[in-house]
Length: 294
Image (cartoon, rainbow, N blue to C red):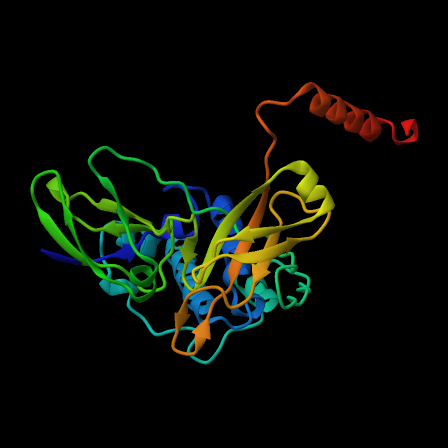
């Protein structure tokens, strides 16, 4: 049995099935901003993801098309590419689609190595676990990038062959229509994480760097893993949790294109503080409450 895996529109927008129209609009605006080519340097991976986000909103916001999609009717969703002639500016696009006037977004140009703060991407949509209707499969970075054929054994013994989409990422959730017992859908979550903790998302690589508060406050040099081996990253002083530092050209490669690696700063507090450390934290707390106490 062979199946083609289609992305779940709800998961693409990070929503639970049946979310309200207001929730749908908010999620669409967030994802459209995240993936619009204007805001991603015309990255081809972002272009493809933006098309999927647009398709998801177009279907879920239209009761008739949504009903057909939920019933498994794909024929009615086959249409021409609305972006074949190019992408409108992000602000113009949202104003036309949602009727919301927007203001221009000024992106700070990225610097050459490791010191360009950008907005942290939201985590992959949470997976709603359903008994006997969901599986997780691990892919290598190359399998996620180029797509691959995998076999999935269902509980009733049915063997399903499917092709994963190219430019996939860790946390993607695919829906296999009608393959489970009783004609139910089966959901497949992709896990694309290297042993070093590098998460793959299309051409991009994501990594969470845990730092103690002094290192984040004062700055430090730290070795971080990449697909090509460890490199030294200079963490700027005053870095907060959620800040992203860009390592240019440290992502995956296809043809003449190569993605970047984004390093997310995560500040952690030691579980066991000594007396001297507790005293320092109390002093910092006092200074935060009363700066003149210094």
